[in-house]
Image (cartoon, rainbow over all chains, first blue to last red):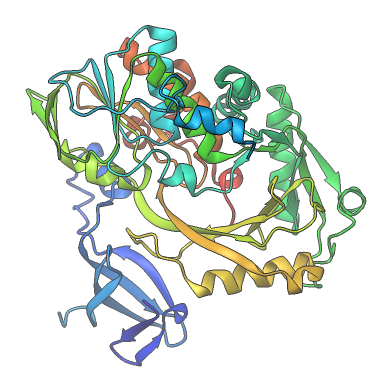
Length: 84
Length: 413
């Protein structure tokens, strides 16, 4: 992957972007047990697969979602949050 | 070749002994199955056989011996870590390393060079002083030296780093060393093999069978095996294996790239690391400069190489050593680093009975090969965590008791 398509700015060199990990659901902090909360804080889905990830375009300040195959390093599609 | 030698090559009476016994089939059951025939897995097999008399062991490897991160690292060995747990652990490793060539009767090219970790900022100097104090407390040779001492020890280096990042001082670690990485896996493998351990290459684990939360068997591409103990030592593939037993971990995988130059005359004796410039470099016995940098910036389960990496690392190398401008880069490669949030490994027993982890070796695993083998062998044999790895257990995350090694484990943060 050398180019990544920002939903606002189009295809840009991947060096202009910052990766912020897989999209994860936060449990309700008021109701989650200590173990559930620790699992949310630390545990990750480290296996390969197609993942929904947060990316950030540094120059323009755009946060967006990329669906990416982490084994082939192929981006399937990118979109703004809520538009997927 | 003298013609007389041909006699031996053609004679059946003088067969060349192979490093490893070829095994045509798996046995139906083993006392212990080790997944991964890298340095760590083979070292654990070796010490299980040598120290604990457990020889009914299979080491399963989906590729070939030492073909993963054992053969992809930059071979640096040191013990100047930051936490008491880390220093005690890696110090034992360095001591084990020093005897290995003799023990294996195999030349590992273990070469004590001295190790400089350069500091370019006040905060880096503070971390160096902190590390030096912890190190000295545990009897590890480690000291902070000033910029003048660095300049005297490394006259070939531009001490201002092209004006970008003047060196303020360094942490100097006299026992810092390098070794030939493949040979380490071969030495442990041969030692285990001679004691009866079976090494099965090109044998992929496809599943782990559980009964009532206990390990009872392993499914492989060459048939099923019954066993009550499985040790997982597969670095970047660890999340695939932990998924087989339904175990969640904080591991995440980023590639770590490295490269070597063409061979040049010996000019660099010590190992040099710069956290700010994201460089570590040493010169191998063959004269190649072995160079590494920081992790790739995003998750990837792949060992592809990039030009970005070579350009970035070469630029920083030239900041430090401008005279290398005409030296060619010969090869580059990548390994999959299984990273943890606190930059310490994940070792020992797990909530799944009979399933042991030797993982989270990220960018710091090679130097730990002997001690991880020794402590994991003890942990598997006794079904109780070795005291030296208590700080590295998986349960530390749920307990919020991390073992913070970030300031000493790698570069680029």
